[in-house]
Amino acid sequence: MLNQDKLAEFSASLRGRIVQPGDADYDTSRKVYNAMIDRHPRLIVYCRDVADVMLSVNFAREQSLLLAVRGGGHNGGGLGTCDEGLVIDLSGLKGIRVDANARTVRVEGGCTWGDVDHATHAFGLATPSGIISTTGVGGLTLGGGLGHLTRKCGLAVDNLIEADVVLADGTLVTANAEQRPELYWALRGGGGNFGVVTSFLFRLHAISTVVAGPTFWPLDKAGDVLRWYRDFIRKAPQDLNGFFTYLTVPAADPFSKELQGKKVCGVIWCYAGPADQADAVFKPVAEFGPPLMHGVQPMPFPAWQSAFDALYPPGDQWYWRADFVTEISDAAIAEHEKFGPQMPTGQSTMHLYPIDGAAHRAKPGDTAFSYREANWGAVFAGVGGSPADVPAISAWCKDYWNALHPHSSGGAYVNMMMDDEGEDRIRASYRDNYPRLVAAKKRYDPANLFRVNQNIWPH
Image (tube, rainbow, N blue to C red; front, side, top):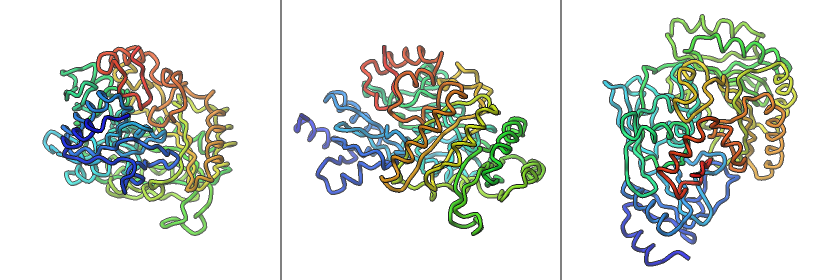
């Protein structure tokens, strides 16, 4: 039973506010991006500043409350919330400061990537993130950070210079290459295991306008497309990123009426190199097939980063699985040809994100993110607008993953794992880095206060 006097004292000490069961906005406040997650926290603390975060961590520890940290709330497994515990909501920490001369941006823990893109684009700069702008900066970064700029600029963690972290004892520390280097190492891929990151300092790159868009081919050409793609993307300039996908063409502009609602395979491109070379880079793409549609065009990077936002709004049902992939074999392609076309809903999809190029410059032990020799990250995402879709999207996702997992590298991108996959999957995702992560966990969170995550046990 929560001590009411202590709760009143805690509430009075905050600049932010607390939402509890029975409050008018409780049901709205407890929602996260994935509507399949239906959890009931005892307290949701909307922190206004770092002091509020420190007070909240201390209160959770002292009152033996399960603690979850919510940035953007996008985690598919619902790891930004919990039942009967305390949720630290960082959405009030929105500060961003761009240093155009140093080419850095300092980002507070409640920001989304859309917030970052808005701030940096004004200076003609960008940093690697994901593919949906409503995603929280914290969750995506701490798990690694795959997205449109991976081949050119590396992962989000490869561009993380330092972080301010509230530890389990309630203290605020800075972690970088010189200060607490072991914590800095662990944060770059180790997820939310080590504390609440209240600000990130990222390296920026001179990226403003990109040439981006989809190329679609008929479903019955998927095998040919995948065989072409696996070789093409590995040899392509690092300025070009493109992930292979099965999808249903949205019933909206700019897609033609003939394509809308049609199941296709395709590659979603983002070219961030010299504009005068774009035509030459895309020439073999436009000629292969030929495609049903080749829709690349120049656009501001923030426009491309937010292009999928409307297709995947908050409140849909999500179930997903993931794997790292080093080689796309002919046997694997045969399984893709079998399961990809069976997408049970218009939003369900499969993506193969390239993680070669600049992401290969680091060695497996340089950051907690281990799979530096992998060439793709695969995600199988069952998505539906209604709870009635859950059995179909979950079954398709699991069956697809089960068929392809034997052709994978063994581990998975922790940001795209559900919370029911078990400790063995977590260990497989960190491989030889796991003992070092356990040592960091013992040092910075020996009682495992931060365990609502893909958890690394301090033992």
